[in-house]
Image 1 (tube, rainbow, N blue to C red):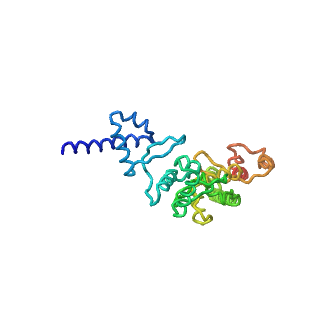
Image 2: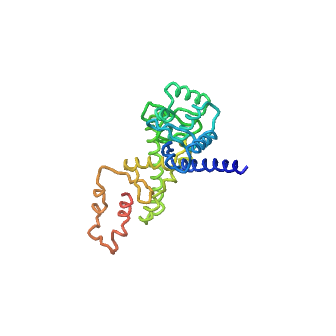
Image 3: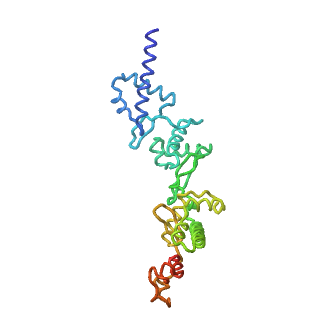
Length: 296
């Protein structure tokens, strides 16, 4: 009985040692490397441990580029199907939201073209996987059926049927500009004699605009702050809004082709000769100057 107990413990220890090494290898480990890292394990004990871990689905064998076979921890969901379906499903599951191309599936599974096509068709029929056409290419990649693809594949909110939705972008730029212009106008009206407050209160956080768009249900899809930032960058380049270092934005004053210096009130003021800082007539008390500065 004592001998049997020692053998059982030895098998468990062998499996634990192999499992620990494979878990530490993110990309998996080949047989030669595993052998060199387990010098204390006899070849038979090592092979028995590997076979036991493969049989219990704790480990899987995958073919790396170049044909090298590697042991990896099995992190995939077990599905009802053939061994080929399980392997392909596991590779697609590992790709997560990024998806995986058919060439990567072929390299990772070692299946020939006919086997791979048949397996993919079966998984699609079972609604376990789906195909996605990535923006900018006619090639298809594969992703789990209930998973939303990464923005790098779909192009995000501003793409429809792989085409950039220019009309949607222009609409959102207009909405952002109008919202910011309304805030600037309200800030000026609320603080007619305080240019500093006019300026400060005309700035708004991008999150506020995103919330406004969501509440008004202007879009049929959610608009993230990241999506809005992309729109605001276009508006900044367009000259309709400006952004300061803390991320807040405000509407730019309407621009004309005429330089602001041409419209400075001092140029046509009849009492400009009597205007002095600190005097009764001064730039600080001039309503025309305040309005001109607020319009810049």
